[in-house]
Amino acid sequence: MEKKKYLSFQGKIGYGMGDSAWSFISCIISSFMLIYLTDTVGLNAGIVGTLMMVARIFDGVSDVVFGRLLDKTHTKMGKARPWMFWSIFGAAISLALLFAIPTGLGDKAKYIYFFIFYMLANTIFYTSGYIAYSTLMSLITKNNEERVQITAYRTIAGNLSYMILGSISIGAVAALGGGAVGWRNLAIIYAIISIIINSVSVFSSKELPEDENEGSIAEAVKESNTSLAHVIKVVLKCKYFYFILAIMILIYVFATVFQTSAVYYATYVLGSSDFLGVLVSVNYGVTMGAAFLVPLVVKRMNVYKVSIAGMIIGLLGRFIAMGGGYMSTIGIILIGIAVATIGTAVIQTTSYTMMASTSEYIYLKDHVRVNGVVFSCASMGIKVGSGVGSALCGILLNAGGYVANAAQQSQSCINMLNFLFLWIPIIVSGIMILILVFMDVDKQVDKLREREV
Image (tube, rainbow, N blue to C red; front, top):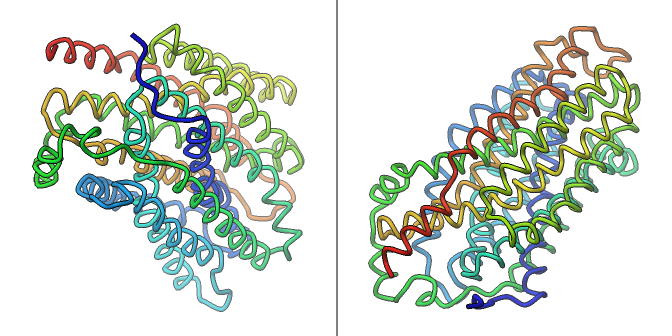
């Protein structure tokens, strides 16, 4: 029997474009924050990386808290849409201030200023808004094929934003006044665009009635009164929660290391920052193209098998890129990146479907609704992954002897850039394949459904 359809084509596009709004926030922070702080503000890469790592300690707590607050929310706008709508304003303002560090401050004051607005942008506003956006997927449709489709649309929208921003941002800074003025103006523009796109996405999406999503109003009220401690206990005893959280973190560790190190790699290893646009365009362009095909493949194979197959192909691509890097042949590097991004497209598209399945597994097994807490994996993965990725870049560049604005870097720095750009993607891909081998949550959900019939 054909499963019920919940979404129109316009609804799918409207939801998907929401990822673009949040990508305007996350891309400039994860990809360009470090080079802004080191080369424009004059701060030490190692200290900045350490502060980013410290900030991650607070993220785990904020993700779970906001996830639970979302689960307890009941408004005319729904559960997720109010959080998604209002949070973007705080995130946008924090972003603009983050790239407007006053030049007259002393170094210690600059570090403090950066840390405060970095925490506000990530730990508070991005957390609440992105958890809401990710959870919204499970609240607008109960059809798994539609979930894969809208995840493909959001993957395409997010990667399109990253591709465009990664390609134009450095040039745009120069066009907008250069230096501190250029970065401030760019951040303000990105902040305004993010608010507009997010608003369109919010009002293009419609949550299902609570009685359809949560069984009954009485059940919803009962679950909303469940203590946070009990919810956390239930979630933390589910192995699939750890698996999907690890996958989300690793996705964004790689994405951030790639985007951040690509700026330095293009300039100091390939010899020109002009190569940055080519590297970014191939990476995100192929990811978008492959994301179109994932829903079609999922119709023939389950999410679990598609994810593993995609990541194996991606790992092969990483080795090709590494070979091209050590041969100093940019053509081979680009071929390797193009093949590797097939794996990126697959895991980005299927990860949110696995997240929804994990939430459903916990509900069927323990009879507790934990959509918000489970989908906090998305926000936590992005923030922890991008934070760890940025910290790794800062700490390792400092260890390699990176000198800001130098005409040429030392061999130890070049070696470190090779490790960041070529080796870390291989290591991350290998770990993700190992995790996916045990991520059979769809099979377990089917077994639990059969028991209830």
